[in-house]
Image (cartoon, rainbow, N blue to C red):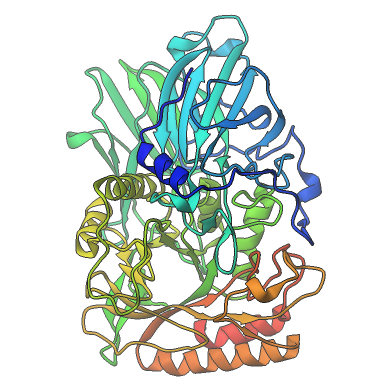
Length: 600
């Protein structure tokens, strides 16, 4: 079981630069816990069904305790294991029970045994990984079943042929992650965290699970709604064999409102007689059931949901190009949300914690979250759908950066460009049924920005139903649906344009040091562009002035603004909440009143 990686050039470069061996990482000084840390046990780690828009009744979570080992690169499968790790928490995190740094010159190994429920006989067994960072190889019962590169997209292996009937089964994983020393999508993970760069995640960081399916099962699908035609169109990824039929039914609070079955081009179109629109003010969701039949016999069934809503741009009475939801102007005001946790890093401690961040921002009067250079578990988007929160979804950044004034895009290697496009495509395909997502953001501030026009066309072809913010911040190339600027503290805006909306993708950055709720005590590592308020009262007054300025910019054509940021993160203390989610730095009632000046 020898591991041979293709990145020999990377390994030679490491040797030439004499990179120091990685070592165990102890808890940082002043390490924090959240209100959910103590609720986590090996028996309840993210036990919720991980794929809310494609639910089958039978499944088995593999979260919990696994064996782990750390070995040099190119090592054989370990003979002995170093101890237990709690999956799906990254090995660098407190909740993993290990809290060690891996680094790009070592491999992380996982090992677990499991049994197949007796009721799953005569079915295909699928092994699902919702996310593993980054380069993964998987063995079942000693047989290599597949590999995957990507830290943010889900992947699946059919392990039926490797199962030993009636016996205990064994899974082994090897994971390699070069972190920010590679050119793959990596977001804000950093091997040596500081300033705006945070602790890396290595290995499994979302739910791992098993699922039985029949030999022919319901394919993945894309669901697109049309509020004007009152339709929900379902397009399946692959055609059905002869003799099979797919039927869909939509429900309004248990009452069946529309039914249809597959017709030409492997599509189902549900025609609604009347429409309840989805919006932040009223996040109504229709329930959906899709059933697969063969010669009239039910073979497979999934439960899902959808929201009837449209997103676009229209001219207002003053001639400004505005963002509209369901054909009505809506000023989108929200926060930059990094999705980091002091106890789980990339992984929220519990599903309730995942929900809390969204619920809190909604209660404070925000209507949009910009998910910043990270992709969340599907349950995060489910909670946005359910609670009524719009989402701008960033592509995690990677590779080199270009500067504010650069007139040419980065020239990525073929390998780097292919990895970006492969992973971006999977991210869009796996999340584009979520009604909450209204905007795709391929690039942030020139980080990894390449062939911008090509990437915008690529994104639009994958999903023409949403808006594209081609590059949030710098290096605008005149493409996409928005002209986005960043201004600290701001706010500011670019002049209105006839065919694109004017938005402010980041502003604010107002910091407040909150004693006993900080990841680090040495703020010399903090980013230099943030402004520190000495007291909560000063922070509230500054925030209020920023929003007053936004009100004036809104009248001049600004369509959206994203405040930096939702929570503190490691060295950054410019969140509205502390990193541990225990302190809201501005009174909730006051904050909601201030925000209402923009959104009501």
